[in-house]
Length: 441
Image (cartoon, rainbow, N blue to C red; front, side):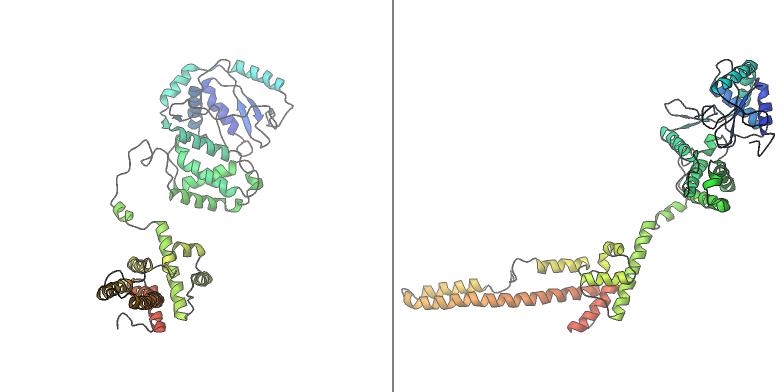
């Protein structure tokens, strides 16, 4: 820009004279204050050849193409998309809102579409393009043309669409710096045909691009720390899963050879596993502290609330109920309890006395020994039938009580063998309250 380098435009026009481009129109691009230089041609030309030749001449004089500072239309797009024709960068047409012709001092003058067309025609008559010079320059230039996928091309275009409008309000700095960093780190070597950016070069590109965007000086509230923020973003993306497009981790080159560190790294716990382990340790510590103070509630809801008040998150408690909920024990304890709780009858199925069967046997033997004495047999049958009904009912109630106590005791007895230190401490406390023998007694 002339305000930063008064000789910049003269250097550009001088660099293009070997191609026969000697006359141009200058107008403002928009209200942002940028300038567009138009070099009209009198005949159709190859856009790609012209872009490559002009880029080479500009770079030979120390002028490097850069988004927001020095751009070329048509641009020398150094990559092509699989199966589709590569499109050039979009260009804002002249004489739109904020676009005016300027004089030799770069001051706006009266402009209209008719005046613009008139000057266009005068300049095109003077620009006699030298085709031989273009062919010679293209042969001298060795450019690397990348082939990228359609998804990558869409990714680049999406990043450009988000970056180019710049700042339009407050609170956009972090998002824009992230998008600028992604484009610079992943695609800059493809877009500019230069080495991939890393370290300080990446940071400088992020800062340069941010400062060149519209609205930076008006809306960006982090101008005093822009380099620090750019450094943070550069470190973030260099340590992320993103990589320079087309390098050894990419799709079009061989995969990385496994290093000696990979077997060791594969055995390390993941970040999610580390977070889960840390949450379990917090729960164990909270339960142990409540046990030490004797304030660990027995009921699940009260225990949950007490643990939350101790600083354990509710989500962690739901995910790790096996550490604090009274109903969770080791698998062998659960299997034993299920056998006790899921029997269809509280009477023993094998080895026990079946009162109904014994009673029926006695009746059968008595009937065999007392033949024909039905009157004497009836009272005996009535009395034994009454005993048969009353005795099982009392026995069932007693067995239910004893069985419930035995099942509860079995669950407590299983806790010392669970391997969980919290369950062990709680079991020992209940042994004392219930006057049960300790496992080591």
